[in-house]
Image 1 (cartoon, one colour):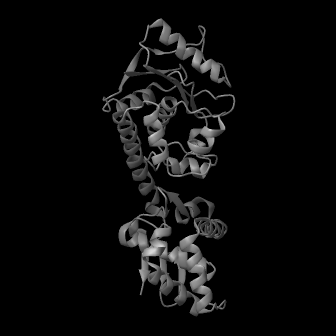
Image 2: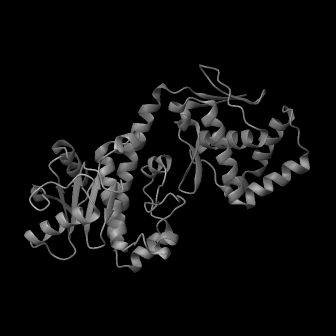
Image 3: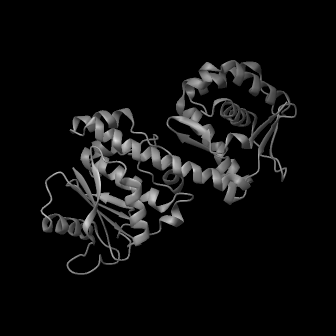
Length: 350
C-alpha cells in the first residue's frame, strides 16, 4: 500500500520536500511516496479559492484514475489554499485526503509546518480507514471526541485544544478496538502512532525552546505564596485551587507525570497536608471536616476536578500576560493534568 503525496502550485516546494523527508522513513506497512506529477491540477487549473471538499477530492480522483492506482492506495493533496469551511484537513472515506496550511501559523504555535502536515496525514489516514462519518451521531459520540481525550481522533474545536493535540501520539482504547474491527491492521496503527510520536517529540522540543525566556514558577511552602521568580508576580488562587496547583507542581517536579483522580487517591495524605497548610495561612479558613469532604469529591468525581482545573486556568489567564499565561495553565493530556513547563522551571522553596 502506498500513500501518494501531491501538492498544488501554491504549496511551498521546500515544505513539500520536508514533509516527504519526515514521512519516508516510515515505510511499513504503508510506503509514503512522491507523486509522479508533483503538482496536481483541478480541471486544468489550480484549486479555486475557498475550495470545497468536492474540489479537493476531484483532484485526488483525477490523479488516481490517470495513474491507475491500485485499490487501497491513498492520495493526499497538500495546499495552502483555504477550504470553504476553513477546515485544516479532511478525507472522503475512499482514500482521498487533503491538508491545507492556510491560517495554520496563526492558530498553531511552536509547531513546525512539516510536523503539522505529517500529523494531519496520519490522523486522516486513521479516520479514513475507520470510515468515521462526521454526520453519524454514533461516530461523533464515540470516536470523534468533542471533549478531548488525548486521542488522535480528538475534534479540537478551540485553538488551545488544537495546539494540545500535536502533543499526543495516542489512540484511545475505544478507537483502537474500533479501528481493528474496521480491518485496520495493528501494524498500520503502530505506524500511525509512530508518526504521531515523532511529531510529538519535535513539537515538545520546540515548546521547550520557546520556554527558555519564561520565568521560573516559585512556591514558598512557609508563606504558601505562588509567584514568578523575576517579576515577583503573585498567582493568587483560593486555598483549594492553590492546593491543587501546588500538588500538580510537586508531582511534575517528582516524576513529570502530572495528576489524575487516581493520583489524588494514591497521595491523599500529601494533598491533605498541602491543602491544610494553605488553609492555615489563609483568611478563608475551612474546618478539617470540610477539607476532607472536598478531597473526597476530588477523588471520586472527575467532573468536579475538571471544573476546579478550569477555574485555575481562568484565573491564571487574567493574572498573567496573554503571551505567557498558557505555559502556566493546566492542560489535559493522556488522561492526566499537567503544566507545560520544563521541570527545571519549577522551584519549591522549603
